Image 1: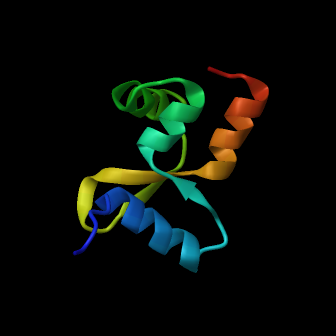
Image 2 (image 1 turned 120 degrees about the vertical axis):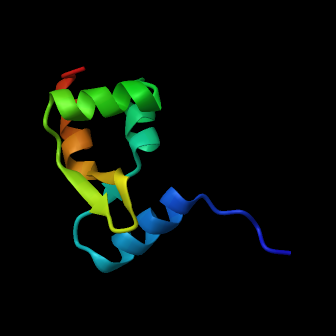
Length: 77
């Protein structure tokens, strides 16, 4: 039986396997900052973080892990 895999996680895994830059989903980044997914989307727009677009969807994107790590390190939230 096939196990369910979240589509965002699948895209993230593929991207990380083929790129030198590591990415996180919006949900994962929000969890690191203590924000919900919706709050994280607002935070991304407000702080003009880099959005890594996903080809199949206009509204979905991944975030650069390096940017999120810097925010966590510097306590910008």
